Structures are given as C-alpha cells and as structure tokens.
Image (tube, rainbow, N blue to C red):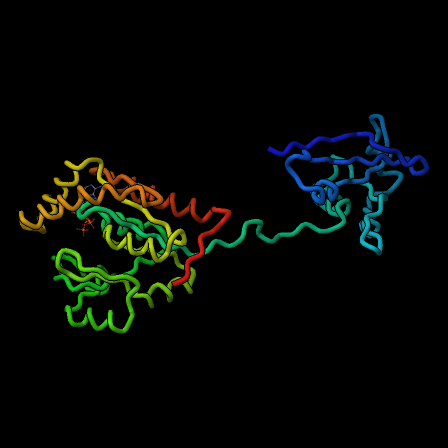
Amino acid sequence: MGRVVIAPRLFLLPSMFFRRVFTSLSRSQFPTPLRSSISVAIPRFSGRNRSEIQRKRFGSRLMASAARTGDGRRSPFVPLPSSDADKAELYKGLEAALGSSFSSEPLSPPSNPLIIVISGPSGVGKDAVIKRLLEVRQQIHFVVTATSRAKRPGEVDGKDYYFVTKEEFLSMVERNELLEYALVYGDYKGIPKQQIRDYMAKGYDIVLRVDIQGAATLKSMLGDSAVFIFLVAESEAALVKRLIDRRTETAEMLLVRVATAREEVKHLKKFDYVVVNAEGKLDGAAKLVESIIDAEKARVRQRNVQI
Ligand SMILES: Nc1ncnc2c1ncn2[C@@H]1O[C@H](COP(=O)(O)OP(=O)(O)OP(=O)(O)O)[C@@H](O)[C@H]1O
C-alpha cells in the first residue's frame, strides 16, 4: 500500500509567510514525477482563526488565474478555501491549488468484448446454464452452432442450433466459414465466424458452447485471448443420473458419453475457471459464470481477441 506522509515544515518563504507543504509519497511505491507533482502551497497561519484570517486577507474569490504562471510553473500564491467552505468552493479551490480542473473522463479504460468458451462433459448442463445466463445478462450473444445432428424435441432451428445436412455442413467448411468444427458422436458441429464478428463489432460478449475437443482446438487458436470455463457436475454419479433423466440417448449412447466424460474431466487444468453445476443449483452456476464475466471486465490487462 502507498503511504501518504504530510511533512509540515520543510522550508519557509519569509517575505510571504508561506509554508510549503509537501505531500510526499512512499518512495518505494511511486515514481519521482508523481511525488513531486502534488506539492501544494498554502498560506502560513496559525491559531483558531486561521480560516477567518485567510478569508479576510485573500477574500473568498480564489486566485485560480494565479495558479499557473505563463511557463507552466505553479505560483505559490494560491490560498485554499477554509475547510468549512461550501462544497463547490472547496472543489474549485482544490482545482486552483492543483492548477488544473478535475476531469470527468472515466478512470477505467473501456472493457473489450469477451469470448467466453463454455465446455464440459455431455449432459453436465452447458445448454441449461447458457440459457439462464442469456436470460439474466444483457449485451451477450450465444453463437448458434451449426450441426448436422437431428433436432431434439423442443429445439428450435436458428435458436438452439442451425440444423443442416452433412452436405451443407461440409460446404460451409469448404468456404472457410467456421471458426472450429468437429465430428462429435457421429454428427458435425461448427462455429460460424461471421456471427462472432458481427456481434463483437456491436460490443457484445460472445458465448461459445463446445465439447472438450472443441475447447482444445479453440485454446490452441485463441490462447489467452478468450476465457475458458469448464462446467462439471458435483460428482460423476450426479452427471450419469442427469444424463439418464434427460432420456435423449439409448443405453449404448449413454455408455459412450459416460466413458468419454470420465476422460474429459482430466482436461480440467487447461481451463481458466471451473464451475460446478450441482443438482437443482442451476441458478448458482449461471451466477458464478456471470461473476467470472464481471471479473474479466474489471481486469487491468484486458484480453484482446481477434477473429
Ligand atoms: N443444475 C441442474 N440440476 C438439475 N438438472 C439440470 C441442471 N443443469 C442441467 N440440468 C438438466 O440436465 C440435462 C442436461 O443438460 P443440458 O442438455 O443442458 O446438458 P449439455 O451439457 O448441454 O449436454 P450435451 O452436451 O449432451 O448437449 C437437461 O435435462 C437439463 O435440464
């Protein structure tokens, strides 16, 4: 932590009865220009009526014009208003003493749009968490993946996925329209590039939903410029029960997914964050993902992704 030390009597200007107060900052923490830039000259008065005398001698009008000399050096002849002056007078007095007006520009730089990659084993709840996230958060776009798999009951074309034939999918690959694609359990899935560019240009954060294989490919392409979140159930048993409850797979398909999930969890360490989507705690998982996004927005060194 930087310490602020007020050294009250460093030198005297006898003719003007001025005391120069140097506000010096801990030398180990701050560079010299910063330390020397905040020295403030105030009149030297003592006793209980100090503010009264100040007011009489200099009047209530601040000598802001005297705050700077022509060559940019600050004149020492800038009295501060008394501490009990009204807020506006104090504000102006501080500006005059510093020799420049206070800026209303934001102190934090604007945050860059993020790409958030959400991955995890089949059935862990990727779609469910993303759906909830989109309900509670603005300026976020879920990239609709193109897939050659058949539509499940309740799924909507263009909202859950773009459902295309294998031939259509392969011609998208040919035209280099996909950021990443893979054959997952016999079906193609791929991420359309243009959609990402369009929404990022509008300042939206982008959510990508990929399997572990897709996350590995994206990691090698995007490196640290994207945020990688691994979604897990609270336990392997809970994941299997959730998959069974979904009733969308045959027993053989379930076996493949469960065996794959066991391998996939080993890749957890390659991700930036792990979020537990526990049974009945979908809201909690979505909130944690939101907090991660908020924290990423507050980073000093922003990620900067180019597609
Ligand atoms: N926290 C939770 N508690 C209970 N059920 C959940 C929870 N999260 C998701 N589910 C349910 O678990 C099932 C699997 O979820 P979902 O389809 O979102 O998984 P997924 O990871 O997208 O799967 P896949 O990769 O196979 O498409 C769904 O029926 C979903 O409603």
